[in-house]
Amino acid sequence: MKYFEIGEQMHSAMLEDLKNAEKFIFMEYFIIEEGIFWNSILDILKEKVKK
Image 1: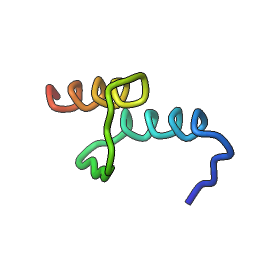
Image 2: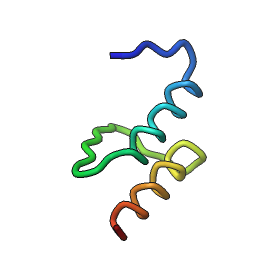
Image 3: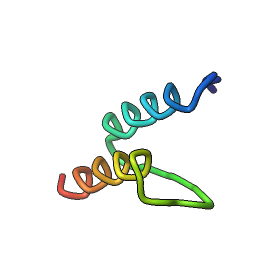
Image 4: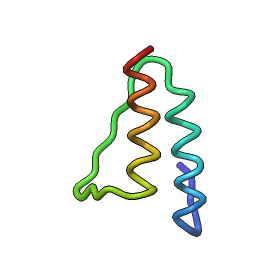
């Protein structure tokens, strides 16, 4: 478990974890809205699907 003082730190760490995922990615969110946060995650997920 990691504590992040600000969301930008969490976002960077999450993107690294997603990029390094090899078999599974489990995510649960209640509200998703288009924007920098979601679009950066979606881009990585699309690349993972292609692999």
